[in-house]
Length: 196
Image (cartoon, rainbow, N blue to C red; front, side, top):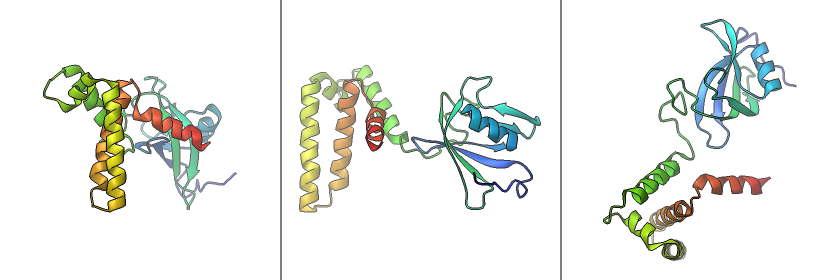
C-alpha cells in the first residue's frame, strides 16, 4: 500500500469526491487516517470535520451516502481523488454537487431529456418534439435512420456539416429512447457493461 504524506498535510488530507460515471466533482472533504480507514473498510465516504472536530460519514443524517468505487492519490501523495456514486444530492443545499454548474458528461443530455419529456407532456401542437411523439415510434425510428444517413453522407462528402447532422441524430435518438421510456444513461450503462 502507498504511504501518504500525512506530515505534509498536518494529518488532514484533502479528498476530492468525483462521480465515477459522469466525472462531476461532487464535493471536497478532509480525511485523517481514521476517516480514510473507515472509508476503505465500510465502502462509504467518511471525513474528519474541521469545524466540529469529529469523524462523520457522508449521508449519516440525510441518507445521501457516497459509495466508494475507487480511491486514487496525486503524485505528491498529499491529495486523494475519491471516485464515488451518490445516492442522493451531495450538497447540504440539496444540489447534486457542492459546486454549482460543475461540468459533467451527462449534464446536457439529462437536460435535453427533461426538455423532451416536458414537450411530450405539454402536448403543444406547434412543438416539433410533440409532433414526433404523436406520430409514434415507427416514424421516430425512420427519422433516426434518416439522420444517421445524413451524418454518414456529410462525413463522406466532407461538407462541413458533420457536427450539425450528428446533433440532429443524437436529438432524434434521445426522442426515440424517451418514447420507449429509456434514457441515455441506460445506453452508457450498457457501454460500461461491455467494457468489462
